[in-house]
Length: 173
Image (cartoon, rainbow, N blue to C red):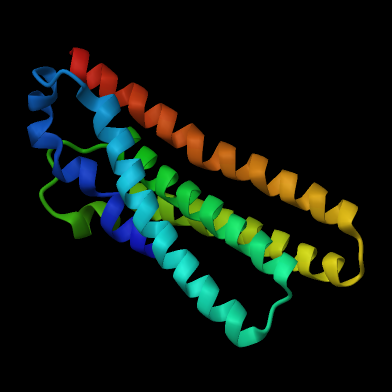
């Protein structure tokens, strides 16, 4: 999450002076934002899944839990990237020239707080699933998984859609 806030969040603001170019590009901001989501989502998933694979092998995690963790890692990575790309577009500062200033701004701090809140939800779901799985309560595992999926969808999609709408207004202005 902190990597996303540090490197992905400030990108739209740093590219703000070049936004006028998007008016002449056929695909525009929608393609730009989706490309960022795909690229950084893939990189985030590679990092997360690599660390998860290493961890579950060293800890001897049971096979069904490994698959669940792999799915949570992939969804979590995409959600974190969706949040940072979306918030970066939603709270764009076209005059920004320094990534460190953008990250240390009030918007950067708020993005970090949102990310930590989402990560706390993921950790709570992981703890719940781990204890319930060990006790054989599969129904609660399903409920926790569905809850985490809905929270991830809302946390990742809401800022992304808001950011896309703001950039489309920039594009048409």
